[in-house]
Length: 236
Image (tube, rainbow, N blue to C red; front, side, top):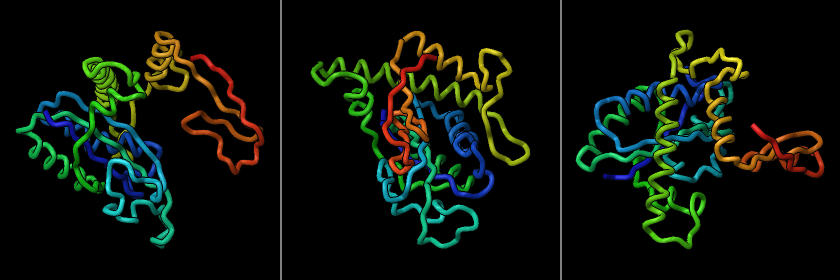
C-alpha cells in the first residue's frame, strides 16, 4: 500500500463562498472519489484556514495561485488574505495509485479547486508519533497505535461523507440537519462529540479573556486587548 496525501484549496467563488466550503469540497471531490470503485485501505481529511505566509505544510504554496486567497471584490494580488484548504490523506494499493490520483485531479479541476501536488504521507510518523503515543515504546507498539488512530479518523471521515447533502440553491454541499433535542445545534456530531467526551473523560478547557474566548488550538488573539487569559474547564 502507498501512503499518500494532497491538499485541496477552495477558491473564493461559487459554490465555495459560504460556511460550507469544506463540505462542498467533500461533496464535489472526496465523496465521488472514495466511492469510485478503487478500494482504499483508509482515508481521512481535515480543514484549514491559514495565511499564505504560514501555509507551508503538505503542499507547495507557491504553486497555488494567489487568487485563491483573495476575497471577492479585492482583485489586487498583492493583498493575500486567508487560504482555505482540506488535507486529504489516504492509503491506496500501489498498482492503483496513478489511476486514483489522475481521477482525483479530474474532480479537483472540474470543481475549480487547486492542488500543488500529490505526495507521500508519513503515516507512521504522524499517527504513531508523540501526539498519539509516547516515544519510549517499541516500533511494534507505534504501528499498532497508528493503525488504531487512523481507523478512528477513517470512521469519522466515512460518517461525514455519509452525512453530506447537496444544497440545490448553490450547487454546494452541507451536512444533514438533525432535529433531535439531544443535538441542540442541529448536528449529529454533537452527540458523537458528547460520547467521545463521556467515554474518554478527555480534559477540555476554554480560554477566556475580558474580550474574547478561544481554545488552546484557537486562542484569543494577542491584539484583542483583553488582558490576562484564564483556562476554564468545561464538560460536554
